[in-house]
Length: 202
Image (cartoon, rainbow, N blue to C red; front, side, top):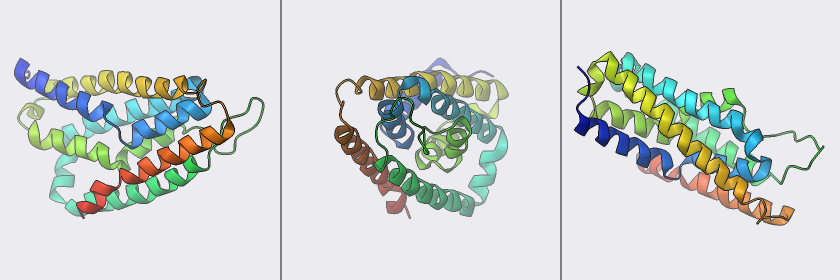
């Protein structure tokens, strides 16, 4: 049984809203695009897209029932993610513009770093748990899980590319090291602000 068109469009709208609105992934891509440029941010983009699509697929195929049966696992991931986000916020706040020919000890996030981050990304779990609960009926059939995963890949690709390009487009505007650092500090504060729902839900 394939999902009805009404459910398909509802799920598509849900994914578009969740992917394109500001969250940890998008804030980090914005900062990375500005600091390192689009090309160096590509592994970060691919890691987010494939990492989250893999999470959607595995949760849809049964892993989600484990998290629903043992809420403590969600709690552990939530606070581990919060701690890691605080660390990432500190890294972003200290990042300046990448200088040609100069090695950067931090550098943009790697493919594996971005992919693994999805499992402790609080907003990512909001999307996945929302999918499990709101679209449980359509997730009972493997073809629908495949469709959900494909939608995640497509919407995720467009969203991450847009946010990284947006950051890159700011490079001609924020030309001084002082402005780039000020922008990254602002992004770090927004990243910390994204933790507010996590602690309010505690």
